[in-house]
Image (cartoon, rainbow, N blue to C red):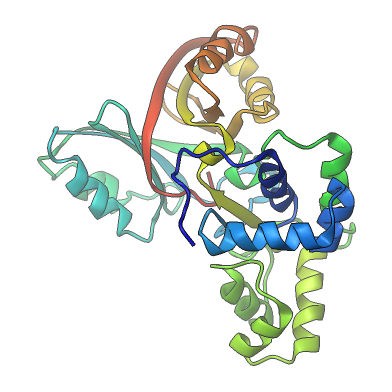
Length: 332
């Protein structure tokens, strides 16, 4: 099957199915059909088509959200490089396991990335490796202090509130630990859970039969344990899709300076905005960072000139993303 061009916008039906997967990456065709007013056969056919041609992938987010919005140890990096050396530096960063995402600005000499690290440590990448590279002309490193919005929490704004509610998993019972309370799987996972999550990581929609075959566990065990993980909100999925296919070709990075008494309110306000897919407080002169998708530059201008008003923001620096080299996971 020929793949559509990256800038070919999906039909509204397909966009709504993408949004349904954002609510629940393992949603069944029957449940999606009931919520969206479609037939199960249509849902199966369209989801299969979107998956087969690589338009949409559902994966397990690599890092569960830490308790109370804190960071599990992350650095926001802003790297400027010599023109002509950009691809070399980008390729080296992309090959690293500790780099969770990489964006390149339209200026062609600026890289934005997030690196996982031990909180408070002298990270070798920041203190030795990047500074010793002659191709790097400047490096800014900010520690992520608080997460307001993760990319895995962003929802394409094509569903009604009632449709989202019908598609989203129920809130976990009070006795379940909060996601991110301990360990990389949200809580202390046992070997069975770890094997299931690892098997689901590249394709979170694998059937119970396929999971049983890959992990060696009985299918009944797989069904029961996956259901538990979903019910406890410990199986956090993320939809990977080129947002140009959703009619959102513009992505902007926003580096904001906010007065301390407005920081929390401003971060929460940005997190609630339908365009914003990432928002976090950091150290450094720009103490609030955000990333957002827009349908065009006019929408970006409206966001800057209207939606940021009254949030206590004293300075804004905006960079438009030219390309995403390494798709982000759940930690940013």
